Image (cartoon, rainbow, N blue to C red):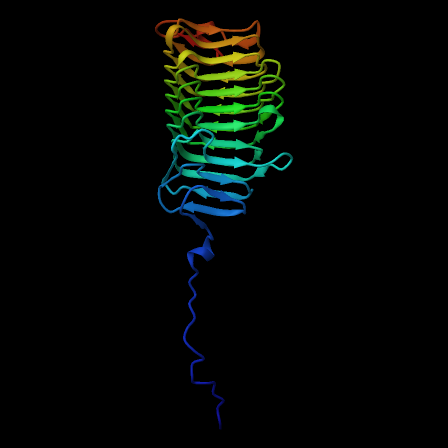
Length: 326
């Protein structure tokens, strides 16, 4: 009986089965600055880089920029931005993520306008000659909404640490700042500005440390505009100049669970609400200011608890919404 046999000669050398890194995660290197991104994709730094102009300019959506722990450094030139994320009128840039590195010595560290649905993560934005992180919605020309800024440091900048600019019909709405450190900036720590028909609404500032800034720690301002429905919660606001948290012409906000201590200057205040209404202010602790609390007449707030020693089992000292003053 004859048995059928297959070919005994191999068809050729074995082909590789491993995928390259570009096939697994295709990414484009950034090897010099300025660097402008006009196509969707993932980009990464290969080393720390310097620039005499802008740093990284993002003009397309669906982009991730990973600084890989490196730094981009400018020469503090006027109008130069470390990272600029910028769309155009009617065409917002969406879903841009920038993470993991240091941005320093530009005019603005990070500048955004016409942006939606993105994130800044684990950035150190430092020693810039104007603002650290700037969300520009001013003059009706910008839109900054639904961005999440988490785990970032904005420190030692000459202007505001973080500035949401909704001035003059602009919009900076529904953004979140979580777990950030804003320290030793030359102006306010965090400024939510809805002045002059602007909108700065629905933003969250939570679990942040705002300290040693050269003006107020946190400001919510909406004169002739709106700065409403924002929440400031569970933050440490310490040793800023003048006032820890100021709410002015800003309605329907919630300040809750913050620890506000030892602002500096001749006359200091912990939490101050002026020309405002419908704000809810509860469970805060203010320690060591000239005046710890100032409320507007139409705000809602828990009782001021000044007890020393063990708290009582009833009365204001046991109130679940009490604001402590020491």
